[in-house]
Length: 390
Image (tube, rainbow, N blue to C red; front, top):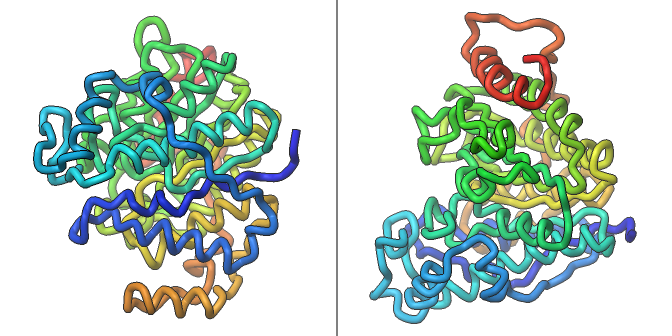
């Protein structure tokens, strides 16, 4: 197995563009790629452009009629079929939509293949993580569910246990739905409570079908949760479950929209805590999955201040060249940010909250604390189904 990481990248993924008024601005991808380069990480990873996902691959997760609807909307955006979630406010149709969505999916599938075959130990596709797309419809800025497709490809290749950990602020509903009945896939999602955020799913009681009880895990965090609470929730749930499941591959989704600056959600997490969870996921992959780690991007709508820094940290962690939080950002990148966006770029790779700290679950819990109530609800719902003490 190669000890080097792969960065999945094709410049054409920046064509995933819902228009100038949509919050998912593709400049976030371009600026992340330039920041990775500015830090010299290209020399530490193998940059690979995988082929687009073909129709047989897309049909591992998506219905044939939906793929045909996406292709039709891609050719004629004005004729998009809204019954498939296309041409809506969240998912406007645009020319070439099928092609670029399949390209992004192909990067995640390629990452999964590289890790499974031993061509890379870790593989990152920060353009991916489009976790809301359903088998038969677009949803939440997501056309094809690349995370589910990567997992489905791993199963096709012979994997028997895959753990998926999603720390986007929104529930990873599409991935949960794709593997709801499959005990070979453990899906864990930490997200803002469905009472206060799209997609209004991800309750702790959602634990998988009768054929796969305990294979879906949901931690519904109260709005306003900050670094200490977010990290406490992660470490109170994820490591024990991953240790029990012993996955052959760890797939993680690192939406940056948990950040306190994100305009579309209500958590209060810093860049420094996001980096800490990236490191924790890397360590879990090495401890329980022989290092096999596929890391994906996801949401994130503070497209200058947050997303590029968060995902550059992710690439650096995967490359084994973690960037110290206090590191000054290269001036060349800051100049490019201003030239592209007329916004002032951040100066350092930190929000000034490093080192982040939290209290472990073993320290006891407060039954009156809303965060602890959320953790208890998840542990009670899932842990006994997996033979663990709640």
